[in-house]
Image (cartoon, rainbow, N blue to C red; front, side, top):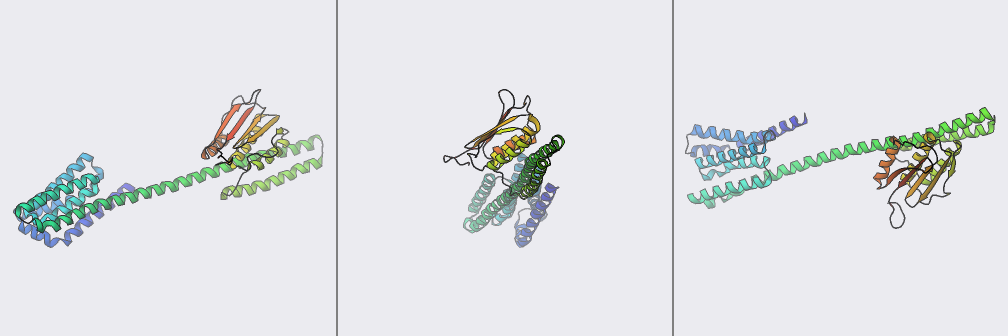
Length: 363
């Protein structure tokens, strides 16, 4: 549909400009027909066919192969030169129509070459008839129109290319934002819902086994606080202002693993400070440990630009799902990498890395 509309606009513009310039030069056309060495009817028919071909070339060009397009351009230029030969070199401006039409559909070198050949032929014919000096102005006009048409067409094409690039960039930005939102919500809700399930299960087990209402109430309060934080984080994820830090995720990991009765060995302070990508790595790894590993112990170690989460659970077959795939893309966007490897004796080791500069800061 868009191509058909573009062809219709091109046809309207081409026929409109040809008609406009023909009307502006109607006196010159009348004098040229009067001066023609051919019968007036033949000259008139040839002129009408020439103008019609010039107007139809641009909209028809996309339908033609390169060889056919060049052949049609050569035919139009030959017809224009034939008309000039019939009416006299003083009417060399007639070739302007054919050269302008060809400049709109041919590569710039071919267009300039055709213009140079026509100007050379007209100049030679004018010299032979002794009117070369009088034709200089006509030659300048012909060359100017041809070159201006070629440059105008290239400018239009460049603008169209920029417009397409802008539209593609806008579409890519929308896709990236959708991917970011989907990835953030997955990371957030997967972790938060896992923690809620673990906390709720811990509270239920306390009431069923010990009847310790104080401990159960403490678990319920943690659940309430977690629910509030999750709501806040969902709002921040939707607005794109949420930030995840490694230090904060280490504290979260301690709480959720404690509720799941999993021992945690981790550094008291994250050596790499707050890093969003590494924080996401800890969050995803801990979520998978609680949900899938059946581990009893987890060890988290950090260093400049990296973090490693190792568990002693079961990892006979690891199939990266949406969480790990999203984490891998998140790290790749920062030039980092994600490595999954079996832990000796069972379990899985997740290592995430991001580049650091010479000062030790993440790039």
